[in-house]
Image (tube, rainbow, N blue to C red):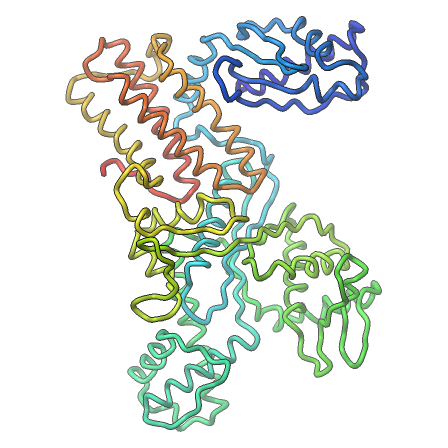
Amino acid sequence: MDIKELLHNAIIKAARQAIADGAFSADELPTVILEVPPQKEFGDYATNFALQAARAAKTKPRLIAEAIVARLSETWLNKAEIAGPGFINFYLKADWLYELLADILNKGEKYGNTSAGSGKRIQVEFVSANPTGPLHVGHGRGAAVGSALANLLKAAGYEVQSEYYINDAGNQIDNLAASVNARYLELLGQRVEFPADGYHGRDIIDTAQRIVNNEGDKYLRFSADERLAVFKELALQEKLEALKEDLQAFNVEFDVWYSERTLHQNGAIGETCEILKANGNMYEQDGALWLKSTAYGDDKDRVVIRENGIPTYLAADIAYHRDKAERGFDTLINIWGADHHGYICRVKAAMAALGYNSEMLEVLILQMVSLYQNGELVKMSKRTGQSVTLTELIEEVGRDAARFFFIMRSIDSQLDFDLDLAKSRSNENPVYYIQYAHARISSIFRQAADAGIKADLKSVNLSVLESQFEIDLIKKLGEYPDEVSYSAQERAPHRIARYAHDLASLFHTFYNQCRIIGVENELAAARLALVKAVQTTIKHSLSILGITAPEKM
């Protein structure tokens, strides 16, 4: 049980005792919120519990605070003081810090894992870019955030499945086939008009060239429809494999790759429409089938099946989300780009129309990424003259820096990505700063081994850690499990990036103020134990972010 849980229980126990003693009355107690005060003189933790309880108790908050403080008798509590109108500041005995550090050392690499999720099943769907070309930097942000969120949820005790929805049906795939066909014909000296909605990327020419290299002019003898059908499959498989390779290189793995085509092939779309017609949430008008989405908060009803019988994009999305819901997840998280914001209401409306709780669907909107170099906006790739691809970004700054910079800001804010900063090997580069802390600790242990210093982390005397630099580090370490739980609850992996940076900063300050090699053995052993706890916590946080923890730099 961590210190915040102990404090929580102590406050509730004291409040209930105060009610039983007649100090105040309340039918229901508020949630205990504990925070670390901004200034050390205000204690280790503080709560506004008395202020929150005042309305229900119809009692001045300071009187409630006095009643609670009078009934606190925990052995690990040094004192509790009332501040302002009824805040309670808690000052803990030093012993709890050493017990905390011992617990961290005992848990080792598992420290930071929590049971907050209670095994609830969550699906996270992200990226899901059309398989018509390479991933660009916008997709990269979604890939980094989505995979980090999945890792974070797992660390917080949720059962997580990550999924990529392959948009392999519809006009975009027809346009892909038509684009490859046009380039194929051009390479073989045929005159052809390039499709108006075609894809102009260099990768399309490369695909056509590979077909020529492998099969020559074989497909000139096919009819146009036959050739398009072949090229559709060849191009789709090639682009999909390229997507998978790019994502794997970016340390992104998916548990499930879900094909949109299957929804058309297995009758799921028709079956879903029948359910909506049967429950009165779909009607026919002007030869088309409409979803009665206005009944569930949408601004207008939506066409699901056109008058020509061809399903709209929404039709597949409705069937897809029905399939998701039927797989037994407690929560569905979709990470979409900013241009999809208006689509949220209609998908939620569709889920409600199907009889599901639309609140089970959470849509996280990812804002745009802007690249900067030498203080200027980078609009296009110097290599291709088109959008900068994820692969090019990784080549420029490295995988770890790319992932960290994508994750370090909240997804609801636009990200200005500084390429020069991401490449720099300096303390101003946040990912370098954190990784250097981990590598520096590895170096400390190598130096200790060379000096013949050994530390039995199970029996070391931690009570000799008395400096403020050491105390601050231990307190920060103690916040980590709670940070993991809260960040998972808020779907905020950027908080873990910030925590890792804060912890690294405290470590570097400690390192500059507290010698490890060259002090007496008992203190050296205790400090080695402390930095080992810091190292494992940094490594755990970096693993959530999908970033390596180097031993040397």
